[in-house]
Amino acid sequence: MAGPLLPASLLLAPGPAPRRDTPETLHRAAQEFEALFLEQILKAGHLPGTEEEGILGGSNAESIYRSLRDAELARAAAARGGFGIAEMLQRQWADRLQTVDGSAPTPRRGGTAATPPPSGAAVRPTEGARGDDHG
Image (cartoon, rainbow, N blue to C red; front, side, top):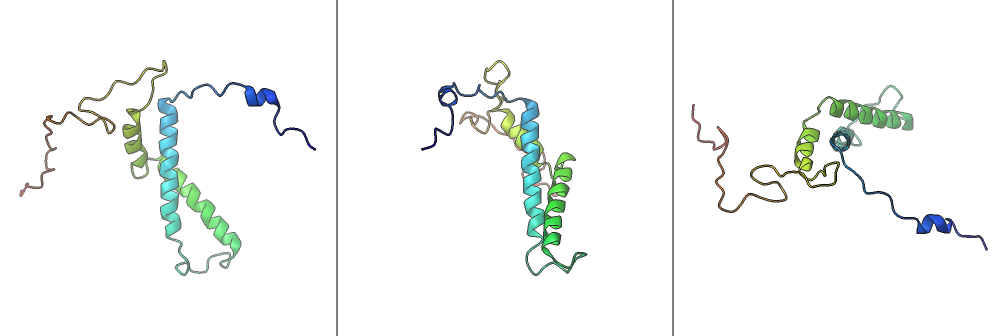
């Protein structure tokens, strides 16, 4: 019978150190999410029957090329700001980001997505948001 797959020292070793999220890791994660989202949108445009025969004759190689091209276009678009999805995610996630010393971040005035403003708090719509501008 074969021995254990992992040495006991690895099995009993303490877990990894707690992860410290930084603004850079937050930015990278948000940008990667936007790239994946944009890639899915691009792939949806290649539904069966909607493609003309391409330069490689519609072969499997063309399908692979198209997939790689979509992924690279999505990454490039996200790196340049894309649709602003990464920026929106960063603003939303920043409230949950722990500071380097492990303390909780200072919440924004008016509450966050996790902690809404007090029930009696007055909320003013932004200019033009009410829809009653007729000018």
